[in-house]
Length: 114
Image (cartoon, rainbow, N blue to C red; front, side, top):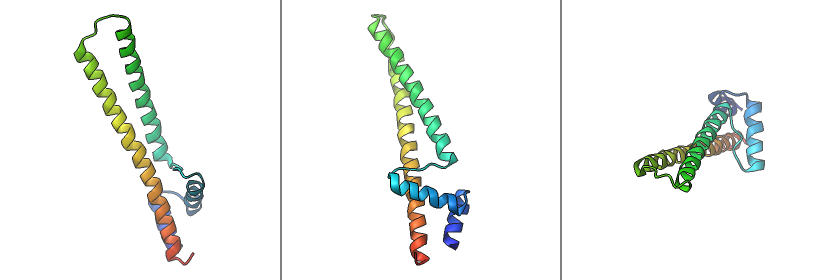
């Protein structure tokens, strides 16, 4: 139980909340995010929406027959690639964090004889 308390304290949650999340992650197979993960996910969604708007503006400009400067288009695409890379890194980080929490909880349980 001491190991679970230490893990919960490190995550800033109670043991009960940590175990509930671990069980939900085991059942659903996906991350059950803590508050910091939810904030990161929300920010990532905002950035992806902005990248989508940029892409729509590029498509509208190209479809209108207006001659956009190719450097502007290259810059917009480069910004979208950066946003997508950041989003991918955040999602991977959230999933890894969830997995590490789960592995820590299950390892602590095995050590405690559970």
